[in-house]
Amino acid sequence: MRTHTGEKQFSSSVCHKSFSTKGEFNKHLIVHSGLKTFSCSVCSKQFLRKATLTRHMSIHMESTKFTCRVCLKCFSAKRSLFRHQKLHTGMKNYSCNECSKCFSRKESLDLHIKTHSKEQRQHLYKCTMCSQAFPGTGELTAHLRTHQERHLCFECPKSFLQQVSQERHHIKLHSGIREFSCHVCSKSFKTKGTLTSQERTHLAEKTHSCSKCQAKFHRKTALVVHMRTHTGKKPFTCHVC
Image (cartoon, rainbow, N blue to C red):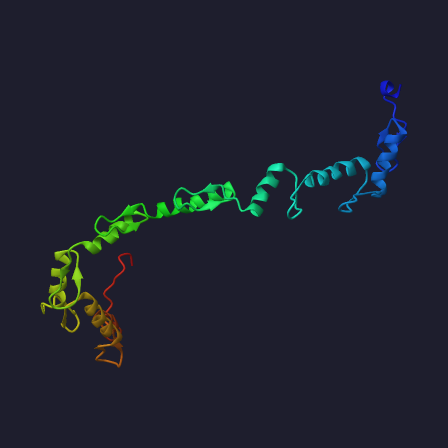
């Protein structure tokens, strides 16, 4: 009649949960007691309820269902046992079509095939002149330049892919023409880099001296500004006052 009336006369003083039967109430009390009275005979794991222990024992029963006769290793599935037994028999039924290498498991064969596909991707582009392979067009283009005709300098061992570059090199270094002049000392140089180095030496020197005092300056413009302190010249006038 309690199922119809909904009466639950057994109540827990800890969590105030109510139960309609004393059996359910007693099972619930075990949760609050913390006592794990049901132990697994295989792994010694403990449980609060017998039903939980029963479910746990099924795991051990499944894992020991299929046993290898050679090494006594246990498996939960027959196919796992069959795959394991190949290790003892030495059977290798899966072979690679590229190198004829054999494997006992299909998973191992699949991993091996990927190594071939990786090698193929790395050698997709071949040079038509020497058959050397490259992974990309950029590497192949750079390699093809080594086969192109090079223009040699007759004065030094340098060589160039373009004749224009070879002629420019010859004019700058071997023709004797000095087209870069220093604006400080009027010296001429073959290359702009040499001129830059020369200009730096001038910057390090204070070649512009004041005739009134001992002050020296790198640039002539700085000396002109300094001379105003001696002459009292003030060329800048405010247009307001």
